[in-house]
Image (cartoon, rainbow, N blue to C red; front, top):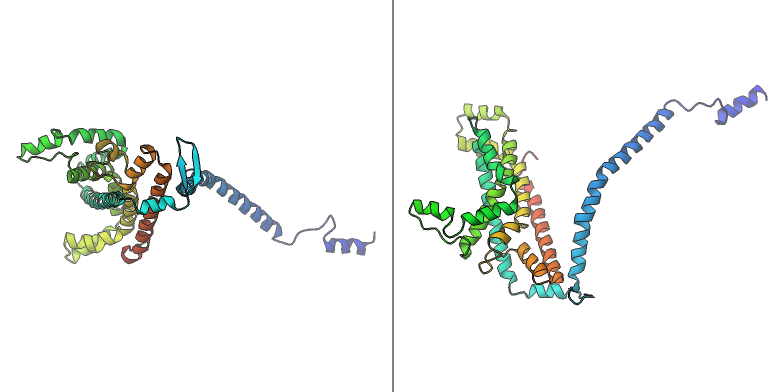
Length: 321
């Protein structure tokens, strides 16, 4: 082979002495590393995706499917029913009372929980001795079993229980908390609020400790009062946390089941028969799983709508997002 032929082969890239253009090898190596990182990322998120698909995605699809059928467990039949369950829902005479109880319960729980959590966080954010002890005390109900908490609360709320005994010491005759409609709703709201207020308190406390001290010093030099400083500096800077806690609390208020089951079982009357508890009764007491699935779809739509409204409204009042 002549020297000229070997040089031509090298020029076409087929010779053993071929060298890639400068930088090409590094690019190939970078592409391989990037692909390897992508595979590692997918493997990391795969358990979360699989868990979401198994415990969230598939159940949502299944509930919608069941709501379009007539499912009789005793007869073992599962027949297509179309929109029959939704027509039954629209003409259900008890639905109005259920939605009214759900509205009062959710509004009361959200307002009381957020207000109390923010108040406790502001008080415990002061540099005083013993605040760590009070933080522990207020957060401890969060880690207590929900059923155990409800049983203890039920004992205290009995007609002659601890709450009314304390009220009688100051000359107040307390109501029969769990057997009067208005008192029962208040009792369940307060019980659930005290159980979970520590979680929102910790979130607010973390947000308060993230507010720069320089802003407080500047406000003090300008002669601003504590009330004005809170509403002009503190609250705007913690609005992202207020949005987070409000979404969590609203969604959680629509899913409260155990305290109602233990304390009132939806009564007296329908005063504490909220939507999620009515869903349970239709499915596991009346064994009408198709209609219970329809109530589940209604609950899902309500939660989705409220979350979307809160997310859109954040543009008007949430700053420093």
